[in-house]
Length: 160
Image (tube, rainbow, N blue to C red; front, side, top):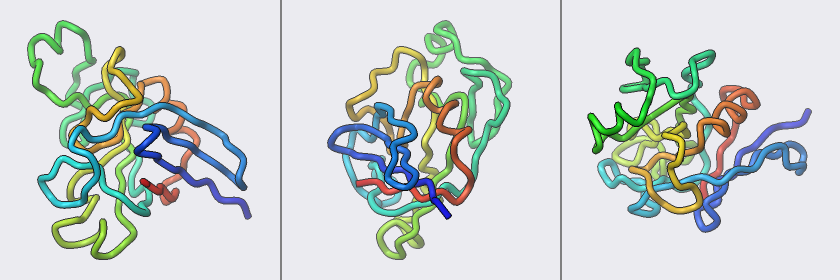
């Protein structure tokens, strides 16, 4: 039985979905401004093997705003951004990651899921291909919608 896997390449700032070594999807992403790291509060992107623990936002409109993994009722617009310029916009879909490597990214103060690390959409025009997040993996709204529909919960995600 074939198995889909996601690889996030920090150096290249890309995300690639494969199945049986065939590339099904590839996109430019944006990882943490602070680089790689697993510690709670570091605002770094965690390394290693993870799984998608939950998929949030199925059927939501593009630019739906999430806070605490809940729909706020807002749809992102530039005027909304001007009202809250420092807000970390989590839009459209969320793939919530859970670490699979005890001591590296699972349990204790390095737990990816407890750090609320996601693959998620962000405002259109956000530059991809360079680190610019608070630890999550940002994608364009178009790309997160496409990826979301290709992945079941439990899919392996390797961040390297």
